[in-house]
Image (cartoon, rainbow, N blue to C red):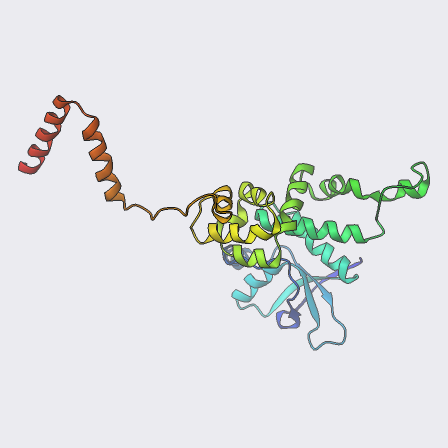
Length: 269
């Protein structure tokens, strides 16, 4: 993929489609304040469109573009890149994986998509072949994907493998169920979710999002009929009263007299 020089174009000439993740309003607001004060420090990436009334397609920089739109800017600095559809998608993924502020689910989706692109490319090969041959040595083999990705993104091999397992279960339907929930950034809970069968995962996720379960394990027990649903939440003052009664039952007679005296002093005072 070749990169061209940075230029300035009209925001109205940019289309946004086929994004792997949605923009986060909080991040857009932060960028809006930053760009408003300092200007756009890093140009967004776009590709030139052919046979379209819109001239460019966004490759990377959706949050920056949304912030500039919020600032009512008419033009934006861009770097125009060229390549196949898969090459442009890989560029979008690699730029995002370079960031440390990704949610767990976003990273998982990017890692999974990137691995699938690599699996389909000539860069990777299956097992077999003459390991001494120059052709074999020049190919990155499937078993090596996590090490190669770690070297290119800065994420550890362990993190990438866990992300891949999570990404495989984040189907469009699962993402819709989890939309807006804390689960999307909960590494432990998402890893737990990967351990269950496909036919039960959605039910487990729905129970957590609806507040009927507090953990993946608890939701799994409920979904498989091994546990009852959580009882209704106890009012704080009702809980205090229950605790007081329990304390009274455990107290000695002397302690009870002191407590009554304290109550009388409080009432009379």
